[in-house]
Image 1: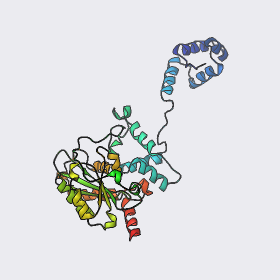
Image 2: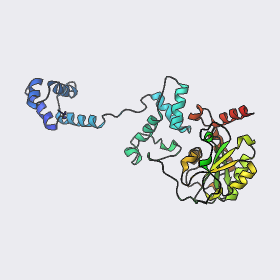
Image 3: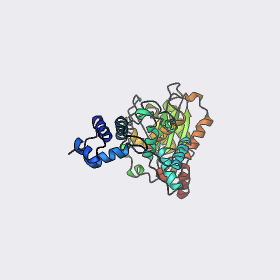
Length: 333
């Protein structure tokens, strides 16, 4: 038989029979409950020097029922301080979880628990307002999402009919990130002006080059790509994968100048350039949507590039992109 919680009337009956000095077994028979249930109910709700109060007992039971299954996240004060410190330093929950166990082997926390801790401090999963006495940690997340939502596709992008090589023709070993020299390219734009950013990310190491461009034309994009990659040896600029945006119409010049094969991802398939899309999201933490890149200095862009290239990554064994890139270059010499 399914267990039924005690009702207010049953608790009032317990109070009445206790006043009449009835035994626990007598109360259990009257309510058709087990003696152990009645005994636990009385023990839980009679503080020292006080009598059983049914209304207070019922309110306490409802509160406990509401909180059933909920666990206090980041119970350790040390871990909690480490997490908050890491967030404020610009690390992601996953990086914090990885570094914590690396630096303190006896401590561990999952990145999911950190996310839950961040969003648990806001009513209605991020839709509501801050709980009294809590600190809004969402501002330290790179994407700064107010609530946890599923990822969507970027829309409204201008597409041209690419005559270049489809990503379907790209060799499998490039997808596996086993060889250095394969890049992904994209743009970060602003609605405030035509000025934007061109980003290039090396697939194996995650190293990023960020360049300021005057506008989103193919001429500006091609110039930025050639300028940044041309300083590298040929073995470090083997291929480039881009989307079908009109800014990439100058792919032939890139191929001829850099001697690098240019591949085109399918329209609205950002996951095919996951490294670049993720890096652009990190850049948005420094330059949020609405930023007018015309007011951003070259020094600021260089600083962001430096910060990202010296950011520990899980897939690199918590080494930085710059460290792994330099190691890979040394091995190819």
